[in-house]
Amino acid sequence: MIYPSVSIESKAYWTGLTNGELLLQECTDCGTIRHYPRPMCDNCYSFGHRWIKASGDALVYAWTECHHAFHPSFAELTPYTLVTATLKEGPRLMAPLAQPPKRDLYLGMKLKIEFNQVSSDLTLPIFKAT
Amino acid sequence: MEESLRDKAAITGIGETVYSKVTDRSALSLTLEACLKAINDAGLVPDDIDGLIPYPSQGLTAESLITNFGLKNVRYSALTPMGGASPVAALQSAAMAISSGVAQHVLICLARGHTESNDGKITARLAEMPQMNTVGEFEMPLGANAPAQFYAPMARRHMELFGTTSAQFAEIAITCRKNAILNDKAIMRKPMSLEDHQASRMISDPLRLYDCCLESKGAAAVVISSKERASDLKHSPISIIGAAEGHPDSPSAITQRDNFVSLGLAKAAPIAFKMADVTPADIDVAQIYDCFTYIVLCQLEDMGFCRKGEGGEFVMSGAIGRDGKIPINTHGGLLSEAHIAGMNHINELVRQLRRTCGERQIKDASVGLVTGYGDLGDGSIAILSR
Ligand SMILES: [Zn+2]
Image 1 (cartoon, rainbow over the protein chains, first blue to last red):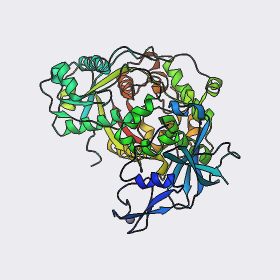
Image 2: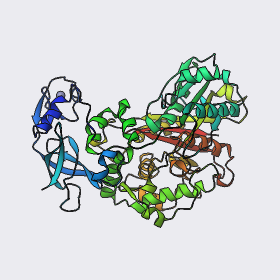
Image 3: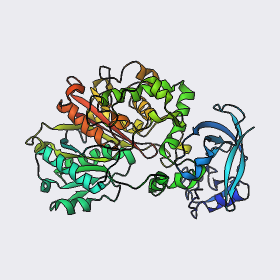
Image 4: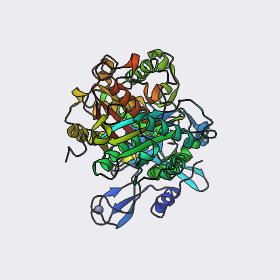
């Protein structure tokens, strides 16, 4: 298992996953939604933000099927598929695809976010084909 | 402004150690050998060096070079931490230091020395790099742990958008191998066929083993001198006529990048071409950073050798072979010579422009380019002229 080194800026995101919610930052000045978590809005330079809950709807943007494990903690999981998908809210999310995939992936394919508790203190997002 | 660095500095010395799969020598030891060779090749002595741009890995610093060579006259040092884009970006920084009069002879070096076993180490090593913070926190826990896995989604999207194929990626690996066969420094010299490529194991789809560069040990260095000083030295100088670096949008996470099929080089290349007052049609030979085959294809498009999306057809046309429109990686590249993070590409371009490449010499090579690519899409380019 690789544990994230959680920062003061990202703590809410990781806590959200544990609670079964994908949280994104929304600028309280201009409304731009951003991910990954960071201190400032790159559209209006505002430091104000609130956390919003993503709908969980996403469309496939790119992917890779991993056959070689570069880290020993993923050796037993190969082959696994990592999908980059565009969230309904705008930003993208990378997450593994739930096994086994229902059919071949294609650009624009609809996915739904689910949550995979990989240990008592770590929950990761996972994509499921709808 | 575009002409700012044109013809202000030249590469006057090159040096390389032996390249191998493993070594019992430290990065520092290899670095010192490559540096000494480059300084000698320029016809200089170590104390002529007044500028240093070391590649910051395995603890190598300007201080360690100053200590070991006993340098007394260093008045400029810098780092260009852009992964594999660093050495070529360092050419730009060296040319800037020289054109401003701060330094006369700048030494640039890079080494990959002895390490203990590799299992899982790449992930830990990457996670420690500040420019990998975001990927380290948000993507490594998901199973994206190494460059092949970071870059493969870009290659996949290129395939889905433009119909690019694995056989087209293979052509790049095969071209590098054909060149390596004529280079006795190259680590991989066994002929490679399309069948060999397609039979090589899948690493991170669509990237197969033969789409991935080697892991190698060794060091390489170059000396950059002012144009006035360069003319009195041992070799005729190879002038830097254009240089630029470019950073992609969302440089800390490919996942969030608007344009997945373009790299930082797309921003740098037009600046370098304009500075050099040349176009892609004027380039006789190109050493293109080839950590993965797809990255070469994308860079060919980003530099304008062909249009976006046509890289696959372009490489299949024979354009990148030694008799083609734009011969690439005449030493074999990272794919077949060795992974010296592209410092070997600069060495080879200088040899081509000095016309000392023997059997693999590109006839009448006068103007060439070298690119760097690193981290999550950083790009660099230098255009050189004999
Ligand atoms: Zn804003």
